[in-house]
Length: 165
Image (cartoon, rainbow, N blue to C red):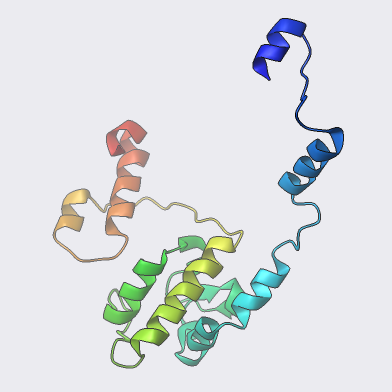
C-alpha cells in the first residue's frame, strides 16, 4: 500500500473492496457487537461469581460484576489482579485477608480466581496511584502482595520512569 501511495500519490486498497473496508472499520469500532453485555451476564452467573458471593468476598471487596461494594479490602475493579495472584491470595490470605485455603476446595479457588480476574479486567475502572514510603528494600523483606508494584510506582513517581525501569 505504501508503494502504491509513493508511485501514484493516492492510497489504493486494491485487494479490499469498499464494503470490506467498511466492515473492518465497523468491527474495529465495535458497531454491531454485543457491547460486552452478554459476557458480563455470563460472568455474573458463573460458578466463580457464586463462590465470590457465598464465601463472603462481597462483604470486603468492591467488584462491579458481583454488585459488591465492600470497603475493607481492595477495590478489585481498580486493582485488576491476574488469576494467579487472586488464587494465591485466596489460598494464603495476608494483609488483613483471611486464608480460604481450608474453607474452599482447589476447584472453588480456581473458579473464583478466574471470575475475579476476568470481571476486573473487563471493568472500566482504573486505579489512582497513591504514592507512599514503600521501597524496594521493604518489599525484599516481606511477602506482601503487590508490594513491588507500589515500590516501583513510588520510584517512578519520585525519581522518574527511567529509574523504575
